[in-house]
Length: 367
Image (cartoon, rainbow, N blue to C red; front, side):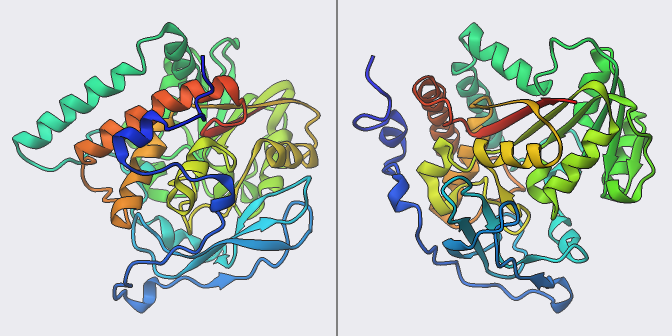
């Protein structure tokens, strides 16, 4: 079987967009015209002049990035660490810890509704049904079903249930899955609205606030999980250190985060959904996630990449590439659903030849 990177990808045939190569990724994105925004919504920022992980200097990878989801004002730069044994990507400047909450006013994980927001009318219903059918195409193989199921349970599907803490639990939907599988679950969430929704709507125990400010008992949990959280925090090593403190001996930490060297970033470059400026302060690779975990005190760890949710990142990336932004209030256009599904199929095959190409990095570490 030919290597999937050879020739023209099936994704390109559907979208008409050529696949970006690594040496084409360091480019400046021309932002769309800025819209007037109330001054009170503007974010205070701070410069990040050196790599927060290894201390080396960085080079601009992208400049002039704007918030393509919610229109938070400002222009943002992504720096890449110069050190060959690092390569961490970070946002510079970045919102200050005091102001970053303003970037989450409409963040999708905080929505307490379980119903998707779609355009009204018959055509919207048709698009929804077609989208479901297309997503089934890549779920046909039993292997892919197993990978997706394991990813939904943060790769703890084979672990005996015990006490579990989810840091950054949002509205609590994932915790319900674990509760249904026999785990004793608790959540931690900084957003008051999301925490209240999880407590009142789902009957969950959710601690509200920053982990550093909460007096959680050490060595209390059998598992701590962070699903797409570590890229949002100002001190990821400190967060992992605190997660380690909370774990019992032989407890398991599982972290998922967008992959800086994955196929999606290689394909979409500055339009890649995984960048999500200004909310994503860091973009990790397997190498840099390993370094962060070891600095936090973990030695027994394993890191790999997965393509289980590749279409979920590809579809908004396509919209950004075509329109300059993503309309989070409506179902994606049919062409993006088709192309996103094609990308899912392609990414799953590509992963067989390049194990670091998955859209998400997975860290699993034992205390």
